[in-house]
Image 1 (tube, helix red, strand yellow):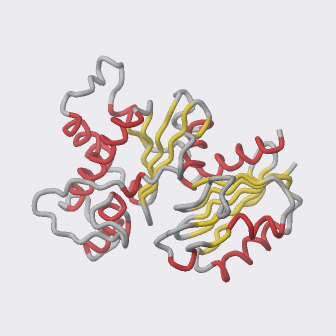
Image 2 (image 1 turned 90 degrees about the vertical axis):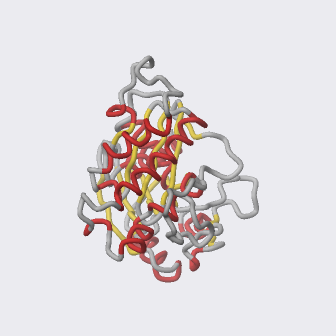
Length: 289
């Protein structure tokens, strides 16, 4: 049997087909507008006899199965995709079972089942790239929620002296508005990969990420926190985030007594660039088994 997967991200769509053992084909399609992107997505899957399809999509999306807009992309910052019936469009072309979730939730699921959190009971996956999104998986399932986690849009306490206006069109000082790739570029005037490691901007970025992780830890207390996305490819961020995370926790949680070290608590994905791919594959398989 062949299983279809779509990672619909803010910059690109990753479409793939897998059998029981491996990825057969995987392609990248630029995220432009539904009118330009979706025909290429549909044409790709028309080449295969897939039995199910799992979609992990940038949000916010409607995941309520009893909702008239189930399967829609909602008030996304990507204006062309607002109120787009993504799932309905795919169902028009393929009469097969489909799974619909956020891209970060399926990435969390991939790391939980096969990756960095496979030995844990819960994990939080935060991707920091074009946007900031978070997914949470516990005991192999997602939390039943009204919408879905929107971890990139919690408000942060501004650092002293930081007058940056932010890059989120909805919030001035949310996580996405302060530490996403576009936010860093807007603040520094250059892309994240071009900024030297000793630039003071990384101290600010690390502090804001750590502040967000403190909040997530206090609310859902995951066994693992996995930080992925393009910004986190600047690996010098991990020790900075761990340091400031402990500073913000300020002794309230005794991680040492819990047998937890920061090097094993705040970690990189085991399957960078493939977390959502394998998460979708496993979810597509579950639809027919």
